[in-house]
Length: 246
Picture 1 (tube, rainbow, N blue to C red):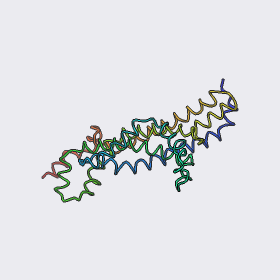
Picture 2: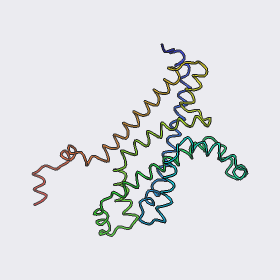
Picture 3: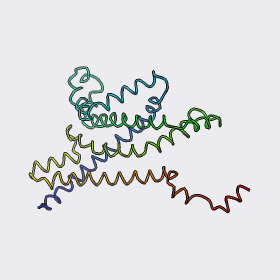
Picture 4: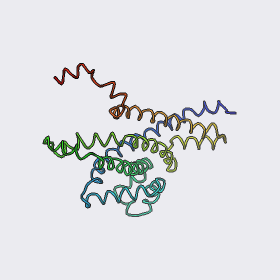
């Protein structure tokens, strides 16, 4: 049986943990998205001097666990005297900075590969048409490359955001009190599983549903041109079409 008195008593702590989880997710995803845009362009470049360093970065980050990356930043770098004596030491001794940096580097690597693949799949005819119109390279990227890449990568990117939300649980290993850390503290104090980890599971599931539904709405908005029903709905009546053709 669930002890509801414990659940009610610990609700403020879980609410605080939920806020920390959302804050970690928002700042990591936002910075990762901003970094991945120029990196994805470099990753899709035909120039190997531009493409290779970005490939190496994404290969290393995607090839190692996020928990290891977090431990290297928070526990590993302080082992070096040069780091402790540098101007960056106030940052690297902060669990918040190390968690943000690890999460950002990780999601940037995955998002870069997603967008780079979407950019490479841009039809050549769209590029030729844009250049024939006299658009600059920046305009081609802004009006052709990026809108198409965003639409094609959106389903994968939604999955990446959900996975990143789950990964924020690793922040508890560097003393950040988010949802999982609150659940561990509740279990330590009361030795109850449903009221501690069960509550954490409910919160993570709730966030997953909200994020999934949010990205489904975005997909309906940006990918509605691929829906045959929407295309038929938006098509003009035959009579008006004939008048326009005439």
